[in-house]
View (tube, rainbow, N blue to C red):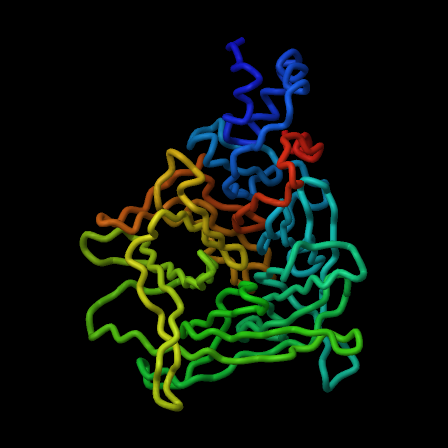
Length: 411
């Protein structure tokens, strides 16, 4: 076979799974490596988790955009066709094992499983109501510990009618009961000159509170606390944003809104479809939350356009968007990595077990020129159980040493 590089070059194989494969196929290389002090490993980028027919696979950017970049994910048989609705750093996946229920956090490295609530209480009824989690995140790394302050937040569907608006809820990790859900507000939209349901589009934990962005690009902030062991919303606040006037010009139509924390600031990324001449069919825009001095009663915030990423890569996905510094990844360029989440919030599709589109994954360059490219392999058209999600790195021990046993399961 091909000659492998010397052991000292092991950390220069950027993909973690590729490094492990090299160790497995070459015993002498592995033996010599064990005699060396553990070197710091290169930082990792998110993997694109694909809901393939025989169970999930993932595509790794660090391995290149070819068939060798696709690795199998080992998951228990009963989770191979679960619906994925988010992820968290360290190999955690939010999934619904029974599509509409069986919500859990599953770690593909350790196979640890944390069960999440399937119902929300109704204040006016003794019966709990089933909910479907659509997007979720947590306040800190998940843990089984009873004293762990980890709190979860989710955008959910929890009404009898499929077409009803999404709501939000929270729970303490380890609890099988969420707090009563919070329905969306109705705000007056000066652009359309009518009241609009402020349906939640994305959630992020930022500076000690959960932030939700709505279709009108306003932000709902919830700070949670424990009062006599009960989880309560200690503080809630609407951050109202000045509307962006399109001045009558045609503009792309927003299909998704994401919140990303980057360099301690909160960014909003808009994903839009576009049929304007000279533009790609998919367009992304980035904005930074800015506080402004305004008269009483007027919006106190604006979304300031960010024309260039200034040395950053953004990975956008509902509940799991992340920002990475380009300086840590030689050979990469600025861009927004996206996945096919057009049907992520489709309750009717979830309930009726319909197929999800999975092919529109790639990278967007802000430009000029504005370019949307496909950088993942292969082109999978659809899935009968889930949309794709990001599998987020992180969570290794302080030494950042190579071979956690869990990586063996991913071969």
